[in-house]
Image (tube, helix red, strand yellow):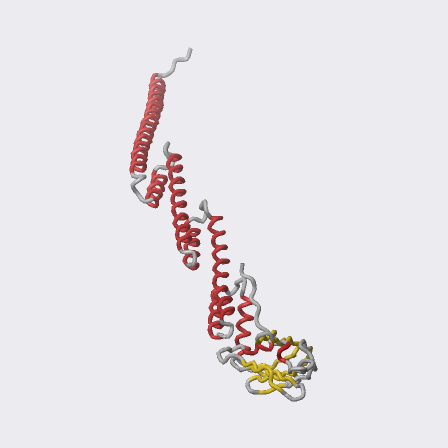
Length: 329
């Protein structure tokens, strides 16, 4: 048997001892690192629990925005801790409460101030900016559409009401039309507002119009005693310029003239209109003298339909037209 030299044996023993020492030291190091990690994790969980208690304790005392900010800070500082999911749940609840509070504020203002359309609109838009993914986004968008429609109708209703009450007040109508178009350039009634504006500009300038005397209806008492009925003709004066007389329809209380005045009628806003009816039985006898009111700027309307005086009436037709307002509701 070969004998191992004592020097070689000693080297082997030393190497084994070194290896054992290294293995032992490495194991102890890992244990120390594990203990340190466990201690750090426990301390972090403890701090997280303390922060969570503060979050709960101050939850009902702080503003919702402050609660959300505190929850965000917890989630940044203590991500991965046992309480992370609970804080996420609390944060979602805070956001919902803030969402509900902001929407309720907008609703309350809108109900209390229904005619403050610009401010109502801004408040709903602000809600959408604060809560782009909020629970009431659909409601806010629907409210904006409703506000726009109601605002449009409200402003045009002012135009329509003014036109119906005082159609000859063109300055007021022009102001209202321009105001409406400035706010509602794409509004539902923009065409009607533009048409009315053009009409107000047109009637302030002298225009030329065709006028036709259609027919009449007269009380039997207008005729001479023992006559077979009046023989009537009609003349008109517009701003002092006479047109006619028309043809004579003999012995009729329901004359049908259908007489087109040959010359165009020249008229502008404020010009007067006068209608003269003459009975031509034996000699000319003035029967009716109808004069427009001096305060009526739209006297031309006397030549655009039926004119009545007592039991007597005349019917005219003309290409002078008034704007027709669209239905609002």
